[in-house]
Length: 118
Image 1 (cartoon, helix red, strand yellow):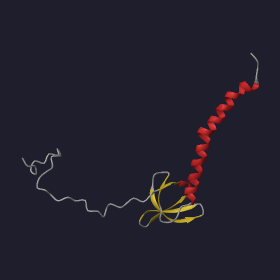
Image 2 (image 1 turned 90 degrees about the vertical axis):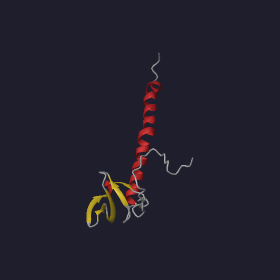
Image 3 (image 1 turned 120 degrees about the vertical axis):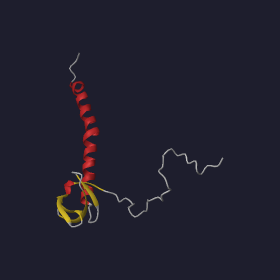
Image 4 (image 1 turned 180 degrees about the horizontal axis):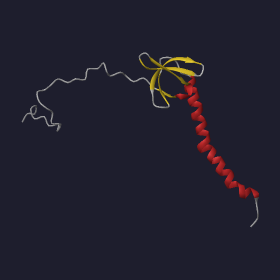
């Protein structure tokens, strides 16, 4: 057998190339998206921090973000602590969900014999 240096290092080179395309490149893309999201923060946006805290952005100052946790409760965080921006969801609290009482407990079997006709 010949000692071909290219044949010896080819599997190692292929492993490094595969590792780059499967691990390093996607991670860099996620980091760039995260930085872009953090730089596009504006007051009034609902966010979640890396610790799972939900808040509203009140002000931006250099690398700091002032978050409002509850009415009148504000804290200062770094932009790097913002994990994601939350998309607004329709507020269902104003919708009336109470059903009228029908006179008895529902058995849950779906068989309402009082309205069936024979």
